[in-house]
Length: 538
Image (tube, rainbow, N blue to C red; front, side, top):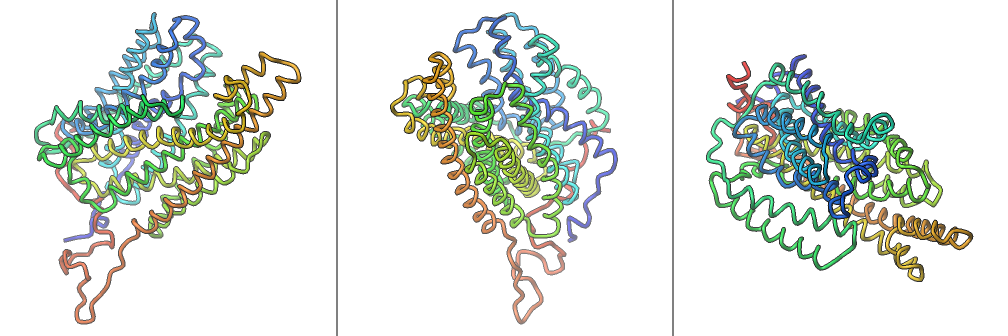
């Protein structure tokens, strides 16, 4: 038996070109999360949506995306990841055109749902294909690092692209820009990207599809609403309903041979830990973004486009963080690099905790340090989780990673947002009820009052918001330091012990003549039927 890393086929120019093509749908899907930030005033003027419809224009995309990730990951393993990618690209392009030329709020909501469905096929397909294209540990780690950085940068880029497009074109242009990109993807993927799929997938478990959606959607909805509106019995009920369906879903996956989520995924060392740590990283990333975007606009008084442009500043260091962390992980135990990423992110939160009401550069520095640490963690734990999963289950593995990110992001906004809001409301206990609800409400009340009284209210509200942000940042710091300790403890490679009377490693499950690295659970270069391009790719 040979060392998988030694026999893994190195990716060449064709694979790296294919990888570059796969970054295109990733950028577009992540940008669509924030692309409506500038467009909503123009959409409101043209389509006249109700308050509820306006909410669904925003949220329907994220709900469809998060609810179908698990299903689409499993489907890609069965029908082929390239085929699912092409189906998703077609749906995404058609839905983008439909959204661009929507003539009613209902039509736009329907198009956003279709965009979410298309996005749910694109996200796990791209990450799973990266796992299959790069069999060498070092190359795969580098590719996933770039993938993670592109995904993080795409969210920030979406709002900026939206502002630029709206300065020159009508609101539908923010969606129409997706169409030529999808056409390019449809032309290049069949030529450059080989097909990969599970050679023996078993029957598709149709009942698990609604069960997975019933588990994911109520929880995501409840967390998002708690972050936006505060704790209410209805939203708590949504969480309980989702958790109940989640229990039923997990029981079904544990008892069926043809489960949608294969139990083989969790046999590899590091997969479950990787999903959990990735969820914590998303918690920190979205929890911090909840405050930094409001700080730029409502505390410093920036316009939306100006705030979006400033929010791109941390991306300068994010771009270097992922490749550097991937290189470090090749030289030392990745457990310590992941733990270091959490410590770096905690330092970023600590800097944000020191921000005052006029601390733009301190905020941007803290956000940049935090984002660098988070991208370090996300890229390494994603690589670890995918490498430890069977290659034929790469789609399911990728979908679980991304579903964890959706949960983590929603939970981060809910928990840290609720903590900051509680402090804010406590500081403004004697203020106008509308001003006490949110900083945006306080800004509106202060402008309505005007004069010295309005200025004093605005100053108090800004100080209260910053005070709440500081408490939330210290909470995030404590969480990330705890995550660093867990990563260093749980992910550390076991030390091989050699008994005095034999030269055989202590782990007797490994044949004596096997040259295997210390972490034997990472079959990154193992050549399996699923790693072999199917005839469709020839």
